[in-house]
Image (cartoon, rainbow, N blue to C red; front, side, top):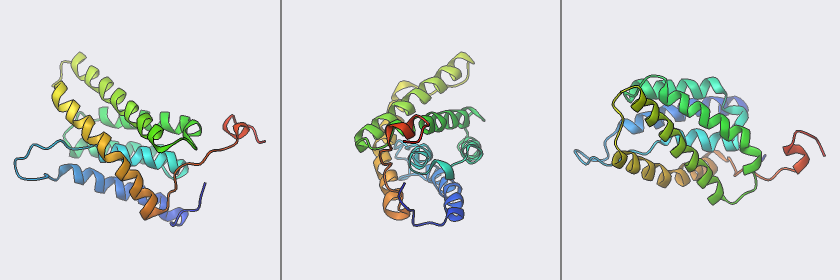
Length: 178
């Protein structure tokens, strides 16, 4: 991993702070009455962060941010947090496979996981007879999130010095030292 511009303690504090900013950004209207789709900036932030700095994105922080987002965004409490935690842990477990791949493949992996997460959340809502969003709003939400992911990753790279994940030797990926 390349060196970050942040000290290790500052790096651990930065994710929760940026996560809170991402949650509050979802509460801001783009323009009065526009009904513009709101991207899931928190998801993009967590996934890009876990790929680049997994050690400074502990499970408890991701869970706390997910629960805070559920409370503040009036979502079913725990469902979004569970999706965020599962997605981040899947990415954390597969981070070795995504090291050194072109950014487009990282982007596709993050978005396929996002679509799967939303599909499972929607299925749980429908099975429990809760109000679930329709396909059109979900489609716009997915499109907005897909569009914003490269910008979130770029901000992590430019502002915090979190370079894209680099390739690791095959032996290291499998848990053995070469």
